[in-house]
Amino acid sequence: MKLKLFGVCVMSVGMALLQGCTGGEMVRDGEVPVEDRSIGAEQPADDSYDGARVSGAELGSEFAGRPVDELLNDPNTPLSKRTFYFEFNSAELSAADRDALATHARFMNEVREVSVVLEGHADERGSREYNLALGERRAKVIERVLTLQGVAREQIQVISFGEERPQALDHDEESWRLNRRVQLLYSGY
Amino acid sequence: MMKFMIRSVAMLLLLFSWQAQARLVIEITEGTEGALPIAVVPFGWLGGADSRTDVADIVAADLGRSGSFAPLEKSQMPGEPHSGNEIDFAAWRAAGVEHIVVGRAQRRQGEGQDELVVEFQLFDVVRGVQMTGYAIPTNSSRIRRVAHQISDIVYEKLTGQRGAFNTHVAYVTVERSGKESIYRLAIADADGHDEQVILTSKQPLMSPAWSPDGERLAYVSFEKGRSFIYMQNVSNGERELLAEFKGLNSAPSFSPDGRRLAMTLSRDGNPEIYLLELRSRVLTRLTHSRGIDTEAAFSPDGKALLFTSDRGGKPQIYRLALDNGRPAGKPQRITYEGGYNARASFSPDGKRLVFVHGNGKGFSIAVQELQTGTLRVLSDTRFDESPSFAPNGSMIIYATERNRRGVLEAVSVDGSAHQRLGLSRGDVREPAWSPYILK
Image 1: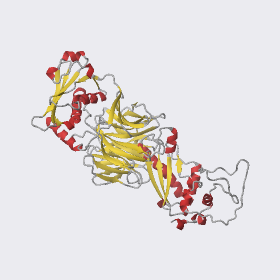
Image 2: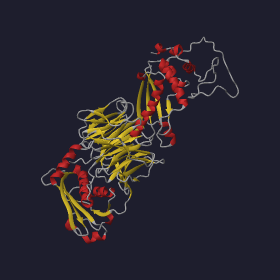
Image 3: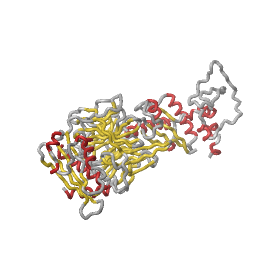
Image 4: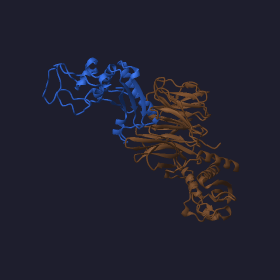
């Protein structure tokens, strides 16, 4: 499986995913960020660092493809954003979420073997059955973003857990924020 | 009446023949004014051996919990009569009680060691006359059941309303250890004793709903990875998978005749209310909106459904008239106070509804009169949910959170008496008060 998908990234995936492969978020032509990428931040900072600017030359000689599983496990690509958070009783996505989902859509369009489970969740407030429906609504908003960008319906499964599977167990704002979420779970690679 | 008692006890024996373990503890959290002063005198034991469970303690606790009675403390009692001719009415009048319950238990002649007969009498202390009295054959393992039956008889005699002490509560418990959670669907007596687990799963369990005859529970289980609806026979454990459609399968609710199950399905795109005819398995869609429609609950006459919908922006309660299982007209919104109203159900007389009421500060239990629209908030915590009426409409049980744990509380319908049912460990949630199980 690993061998089969080896290099799929560089062979056909669009520019954004290629950037994903090389790890930088906003790589411009002819620029390769040399900033340490091991921090694991979801959203890499912009490319100016305290007045110092570094640029490199793309030599194009190295092999940039990566196995899909390694790619999906790399915390430094836009694909590593797998959890999307929501306001109370809302299923609206932020612009940044939509950008990240666009990267997921491109990836899924290229790697048709992968499928994704969209797990919708809610915080504990309000009624349980309504929250179950709310979790589904959130997951379906993401499903729609992905399918509008060409991802096949067969690649996506929506499951709502409502408030039954909290990420954080406290009964406070911070826990509620963490629990109002949709999680993307990849499989099939 | 005697026959009735014997038969009902036999039925309950069938229903509760597993090993039982009491884990719920009751705590009365708020007293009441205007409650009837009554004395329930410790029962006499005429069998020679130990008396074990004191029937009087159970009866006094039942009556006290209802909010309608103020049982006299044992230490305040001027005597310990066990039958009518031992009662010094003047002394009890002086102690301030208006009614007195006395009783005794003894072995049944010629029967086995455990066979008992429990006798009790209820007296009007002011007039010095007996109001009712029974001899109830039973055995020592069913003594709690007999006590609840006595509570029901006393309650009905003195309030004119049928008692609901000899009923049950179904609920879900969750215990977390590390990354694992254990979910249990359990049934206990209405006073929280004698818990029996009827389903255990590592995946979430939700939304237990009683059939009107009390023989079955419908619920939601995630054991196959997502929410499916099951129906389980309470006494023999047999169950069937009723709904495994694409999308959500949730919020089951029986029709009053037990023939249909309302449920929420998102098989057609978004959550809508459907009606499943249990015998024919014919499915009828009842709602059509772009919002979430869920949490259906029938009116006692079966001619209407309540449900939660956010078709207007935020979740509110709507009422849909039904004509033989088909929608009759458009749903009417019936809650307007507060930005979040959900999970409604009718009182047994159909005159009011109870629901989760969010007002921006938190989520409380509220009762609304259907006729006038008057809304009364019954609880004062922030995380109250899943209210369920007792079958006589006198009390409401609901789930809330205390000291970071899910617990069950009950409140009298006028809001005057509160009580808590707490598990020794884990979270308790989603209580569903059983109907009268005796036919």
